[in-house]
Image (cartoon, rainbow, N blue to C red):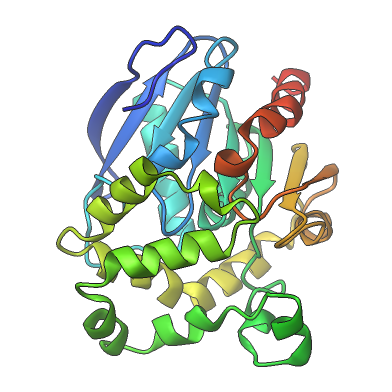
Length: 293
C-alpha cells in the first residue's frame, strides 16, 4: 500500500495505452510529476517519496510496461516505446504538462520522454542511471577499473543471452532480486521485507522475468535512440542525482552531453536513492520542481 501526506491510500488504476495496459497510482493536487522506477523494482520503490511530494504536486506512479502489475506484452521494451506509454498515460489522466523523475531504467525512459515530448515535459530529474549509447555498455567489460570500483555490470551480458537466463532464474527470483538490490546499496537494510516481497511477487508472475530481460535486450536499440535524440540537446532543466557508492557524479557528466541546463547532486548512498535516503532526496527534488513548474 502507498499513502499520501495525509495518510490516505493513493488511487490506483489501470489504463490501455500504446498497445499495452499500465497499472498506476496517483495522489495529490497541483502541478503533475510522474515517477518512473527502475529494475528489478516496481512503482512501490517511490513509497517514501510520494507523501513528501503530494502536498505540492499531483504524483503519478506507473508500473512500467511488463513490470509490476502492468501488462507484459511480447514487444515494445525499447525506451522510446516505453516513454510513449508514459506520455499516453499522462494525456489520459489529463496532464498536459508535467515534470519527470526517473531512476535506473526509469531515468533512461524519462530522458526519452523529455526528448520526444518537448512541449509537455517541464523538468527532468535523472537519478542513478547510465545512458545506453553514452557509456553504459563500457561497464559490461571485465576490466580492473570496473571490478575495483564495483561497476562491473556482469548481469548485462548474462541477461542478453537468449533462454538460458530464464531457465536459471526461474524459481530463484527472490534470491536474484535480493542480491541485486542489496549489493547495489550502501544501506542494504533499506531493502525492507515488504519491498522485497512486492518486487518478488511481481517478477515471479508469468512473464515477469521475460519482461525484465526484454528491457536489457533492447539496450543496443536504446543506444541508437539516445544518440539520435541527443543531436538536439534538451532545453528543459535537468537535475542529475547520484549515489556516491554507485554511479555518483557520472549522472551529471552524462546529462551534460544531452542537455543544456544541468544541476548535479551526489548523496552519501548507493544506487536506490528513494529507498536509501528519501528525506535527503526530497530536500533536493522539491526545490528543483518548485523552481521549474
